[in-house]
Structures are given as structure tokens and as C-alpha cells.
Length: 127
Image 1 (cartoon, rainbow, N blue to C red):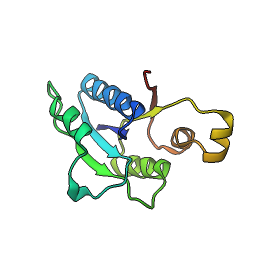
Image 2: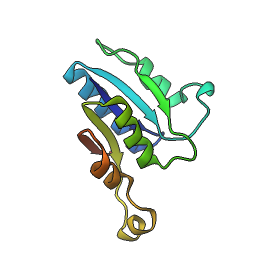
Image 3: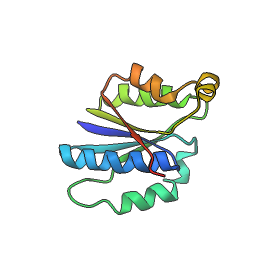
């Protein structure tokens, strides 16, 4: 089994990554990272993420890193990756948004919670 984390270069993404690493180590399983910022996979792992992955310790192997296609909504990309991998846990970061912001933009967190085939851990970013 594996722990899937949805990562982007933000406080929420960093917090989700740290939580996912801790969960994978605690469960004795592998880690998979879905980078939510669309980019060319040939460009390599984003620098901030690469630094975090280089610092992995213990029995945790360097994870598989996949990227959200540009035309795919973040929530759909997370759910699609969860359906592909069948992880035992999906970890996502969340931030506080106003009711108007939720109405206008929708809620990625809510959609992942409702549509994911795996349990979801939502972590709030530290300020």
C-alpha cells in the first residue's frame, strides 16, 4: 500500500507533505506525490520538493512523483490518482477561505473528501 500526497509549493502543500511522510513512516508503507502545479515532467521535480525528498530518512524510499495535467482540475487529478494507485490514505492541505470564495471557486478539499475512493487526511497549514 501507499500514502498519496497532493503537493504544491505553498504552506498547505508543505504541511501536507510533512504529514504524508509521517503517515507513511508510521504505517511502514511507501509514499507517492502528486504535484498539483502543471509542468513538464521532463523538467524534473520542483526544487522545493526535491529538497524535501532528499532529506527523507529511515526506511522510506524516494517516492513516485506524478504531475497534474494542465487541463485537469486539481480535485479530479487527486481523485484520478487515488483511483489509479488505490492508496491506503490520501493527504491534502487546506486553507481557510471565505464563504464567497468557496461559492465562486468551489472546494477542492470538499470534492476530494466526497469522491476519493480512499480515506482522506486534511491538514491545515501553519501560519
